[in-house]
Length: 421
Image 1 (tube, rainbow, N blue to C red):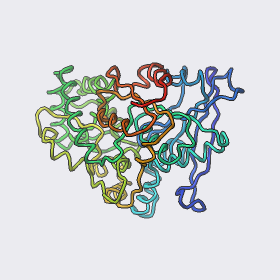
Image 2 (image 1 turned 90 degrees about the horizontal axis):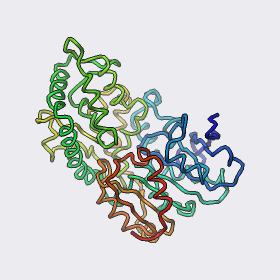
Image 3 (image 1 turned 180 degrees about the vertical axis):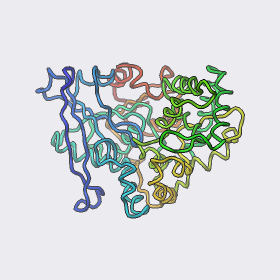
């Protein structure tokens, strides 16, 4: 028991496929958090919808992070492990390897998108608070899930807060990556301007990796393309420093790649804890019979500066490529399923534009002007298509502003009155 937070664990049994309520079931875990002196009070609920896809809810330790501390002043908070993550019947490499076929696994994984998460949340809401609506805080992918919630079950919502996570309502994966690659290229430019010595160092590491003799601690081969995926961190407030200090310790006294560096690369690019991030990254944008067909890979051809032999070496961002399911140990059990989902043509819609246009649930969104992962202009366009929505646009923080700002971002959103953008 944390003296600053009273926590209660909940486990719920939900249908794997909500359209087949008498079929297979899974478990969904959530942690209730409340300020101890107010534990007996009837407080409004705030459900935290984590980023990802494939991210589990925060695990509070010590003092509550700024946004949570602010929320606990007025709310009872539910930290939801979305299906397939954390303690919610987790999708792991071992779990995937036990499936009879990749096609069966693909079908199972296709039931882990935002529409299923929302329907889980509605079952949970009715068990915890009868038919009282609750509020949501959606970070990143949690914002995508929020718009799905407003499309499918707005009656369950009192108010919604979104940070860095408003998708285009009719945007396909290839549209997203056409916007994303230029932003990632710009982030690379900022990184090398800040740490110019890393231009040569990155090339040296890539050259050693391409020699074919460098192994990570788990036995995976280090390749230049895997090295480049470290750029996924560039959209966070500490992302440049995280990568720079890894490169700073990349070589040992003999000029070999250090054990410290190789361990860090394995941990940062291994996806052991969140394989769903890779599996569902492109299906997040699928909403009809059009397959995603490895959109990031296809659009990369339009951006030759991201070629593996380009100078300077450009790190990639939130892009998932088919080679990852060959090169990365934790993703190999998902390879056939990933190929199947890339060709999938059975995606139901995630958003209802007509219903969103007449939405009456107050929606307040923080849009980060320089967000590497979610295009600000696309987010603003979406806000103009949603009723009762207001935006706060800021360049003070990166994509993780709700955490990096202490309580500033959530306090601002909670103070924003309902209205139009």
